[in-house]
Length: 212
Image (cartoon, rainbow, N blue to C red):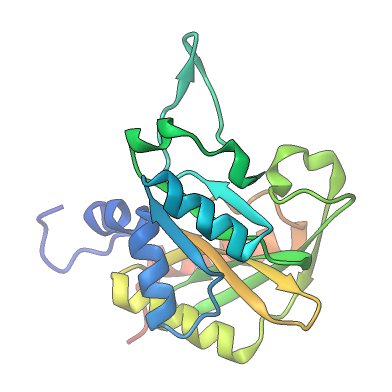
């Protein structure tokens, strides 16, 4: 990590910082993305008021953790939450609440060394987290709006990243809402054509470096 002028995809220190959801959200806003109303709090009444004001609202983990239940690893899915569910246990730690986007599709955009590769994700059904059941999901190549691509480039420059996997919710008006950017995101699950393009782009960056 201390080697001078060494290419990292991505530098471990920058990767760790970019995993933190509050930093992602503030950077996304500064980069010009549309970001759904979001509250991070451990105050039950503040959470209840936010949910009532912005209903429907979803709950998200603040960052990736190795959460275990009875010794087994568990995934914390994005899920709807109602004001009546909030109790004093919220005091234990900060929680992230976000207005649910009335989406018609999701999108995953991998940006590698300045190039972007985007996949439209269509879910057979209605659930805020498409990762729960891949048998209900279909992937197809698409093109992100120019403004979204420019914001993604600024976002990565701000956080010192060479690679990032952006997740968006696309609403009925065609607006792309930033949900998160995984600096170490997986990408081989998307459609085969896009997977090949990302593979080639990563190989080019590792072999030739990043163009100024």
